[in-house]
Image (cartoon, rainbow, N blue to C red; front, side, top):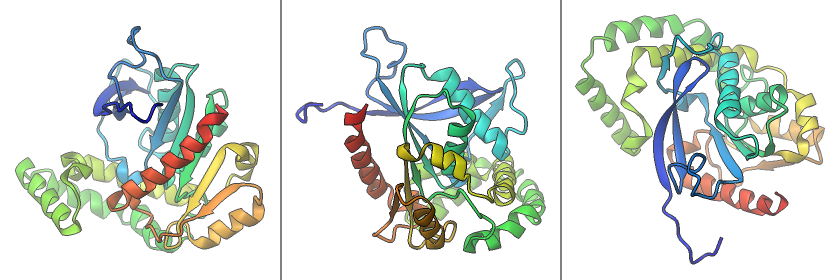
Length: 288
């Protein structure tokens, strides 16, 4: 694109029926009707971002008339939900770039495995929790909390937060954001809804139990279209996992962060990661 041409990029939310639920999606595009407007040149490439579980506190409204996904709020259900969305709402001729963060990286690998017909051009896996999750430094702490003590969270959230007025919940969120020096738009008001907390804990517990062995078969099959990015201070996927990947896949594009960016980069380093991944994507566009 000519560097002198500047397009206004719209960031907005939409709701789609997918897998038996109404699903919230954040879209970033120069036109609100890129795929439906006949007068607009349709894109050849879609960048699809799957965040970590800490960012999956979204509202899913059940639609009884649609085909439901079993265990929707579990890890298997989340994988099938993403596959259903890509199959249903993305034109088949549009190539895909997948970006996964944390458990989103695991979901990306499962998409490649379960939906080989999808035209995935490349996938970027950021701070990838794709193996030995419960054995990681953070996992050893989180596993008992999420697997055994999450019921305490259920009781607390329903007893304390369910009757709590929305104005109080909003105030609590604002206070937390101010203490953490975060912008208001980063966390939605529904983050303190009991069902959101319960579903997040349930999903986290399944991640601890199911993300164990690295899927070397799918990595080997798609190695040429995968980029891994590990952190040096990551308690979820320590540098030991990076070294093992480099040893087992010496020809892979496996990188180590040199800026000490934390696993939860979305809180304070989102622009740094966005600029870096944008450069990677631009370097790969000539291959399309």
